[in-house]
Length: 300
Image (cartoon, rainbow, N blue to C red):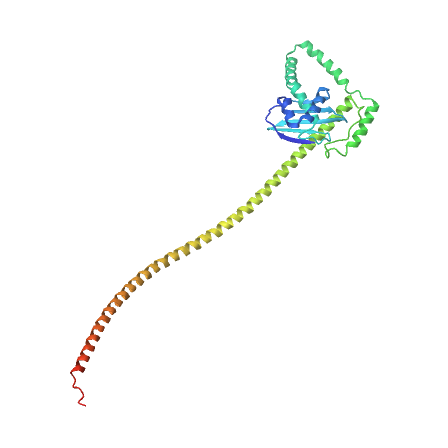
């Protein structure tokens, strides 16, 4: 189970219990804290930003790899738990780092400095201790070797394919357990690199698909822009044509107004002429009547 969450801390020991509990919830935190209190955590490798550990869970020993890099907390555990955003085993490891991580790193650095500054006699004694320590882990009886070989034959075809390897026999301890832990860590590191490569490849493919989509959108917008520009040119020509027609219409309107004025003047003149003709007609009627009156009457 591998998860990634955003994190503001810069080093693992800065993740205090309250922060961890606020992320995973009360029940998961309670169990993880119990694992830590029961000393079930075994730190294999650790520094300020990364820890590799094993936790003795209820149904076996599970391996954890926790990293803090670039504002992201990455947790991975070999357990089958579905607890989110990370499991009780990772909680136990983080609590161990909070309580022991900073002082352990500090003490380790101090011890290295003390060792470098120590006088000659101690330097001659240290190889003897190292030889004794190096001789003790290699003690491996035939039964443990057989159990380890059986376990390795089970997992050899699963290396590089799955993060959860089959559990080893609980009776395996010491060197065999360390070898199992090394194999499990190497397998997890390989899967992480493969997963990172796969994620990077998927991200690249997504970016390429997005770029292709944006290119198509750009071509479509470009085509729309060309069509819009052509339509703009057509509209500009039509506007100029309408402006010319408006000018011609203005001239026609002016000519019409002139003709209307002229017709109105002619109508007025005709009305005046009509009045004069009517006056002449009345005069002619009067003369005709006078002439009839002057004519001699009929003698009969």
